[in-house]
Amino acid sequence: MRYIREPTVIFTDRSGQSYEIKETRRLEVLTTMLEMNLRMGDAIDEIATRKTVYGDEAEVLAYKIFDHNAVAIADAGYDLSRLKTLKIPQV
Image 1: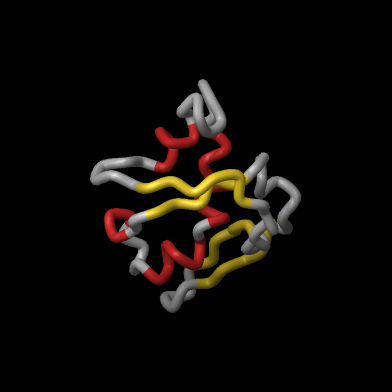
Image 2 (image 1 turned 135 degrees about the horizontal axis):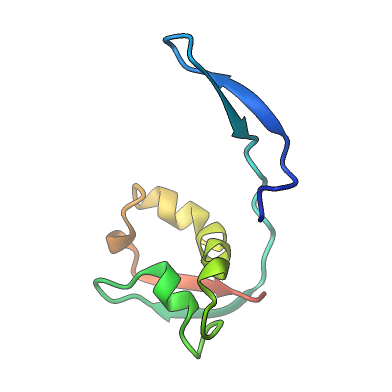
């Protein structure tokens, strides 16, 4: 749903094959609701469904947690096991 408003563009790979893809969307500016310590094996979509976070069936909001922690995730080499804390944004 969050990409539906993004324009479709043509991406051509180095072999000349073209694909329609959605344009990169800008990250939302979000406000931190809480900061939590992570344990080995924590998954962001599972965290989103916790009662202390967004609640049941809130997996669709996990992208907000990824967006809000984008810099930390990139700094960790996209290895979530290297993160010690996670900022949870308000929705």
